[in-house]
Image 1 (cartoon, rainbow, N blue to C red):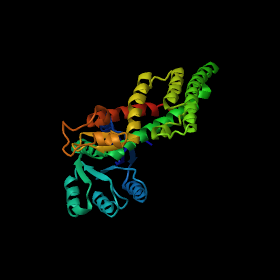
Image 2 (image 1 turned 90 degrees about the vertical axis):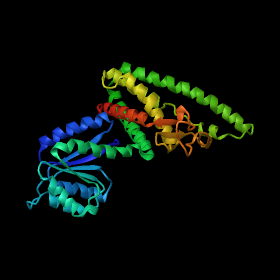
Image 3 (image 1 turned 120 degrees about the horizontal axis):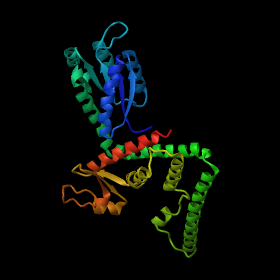
Length: 333
């Protein structure tokens, strides 16, 4: 599952939902935001979905609710608001209507403390308000935990698709194509086996001589024979054999060289937001941290290097590239 904003949309006019959804999706795509939509046509379904969420994990970040919906007893939006007030809801809710804006505001104002996170819009201002809520909820994508989580989540999803695609498509290749891939794997394993054997001999000699291994030696002993880039190279060859246009070589190389590299840095290093909130800083170890950590008066003269920080603008671009690559991967299965 990818890192998306979850929207529960309650609207009895499917045509209005489709039109408004298309506009919101275009805005989200431009911002590098993915949305999971759940469409329901009545208030009973709304309550059922929110009840599931209250008892378990959070699936929805935002609810869009047509105030003109009717409950089975004929009661409308005011009763929906009162029902929601009695539930434990952490989701932002936007009520919209073409006629009843004053009624909604009056209902909410009767008990403001119960309606934190409730917003109101008429149909004309719905686009503006929905964009506002999308931006508000997307801000969670800029915290350290979520930046790390997004990179791990998205790249893990891509790795799953890559492996699944190989499992699915490799048996369908011609014998000649299978021989080419087999030879590619043989060469990579042979090269790495030779390297490992040499390192192993040196390591054994050091131990027999009574040498004490340093931390870097210990951490670098193990190496996979077929690494992640090797697997993507096999994946890429199968795509070429299958003449898939959605994932050309440049996309895969950019993903591995830029996005996976950033994932490896931010997933396994110490992170902090600089005091000016301009960038995320990452450090290899305590020595790296002591030399480059953010000073109390962070500004243009703060001591950092170009290779240990990610600017907000860079993260915006990288996030969008991550979304676009993920969409290309999703299209393969």
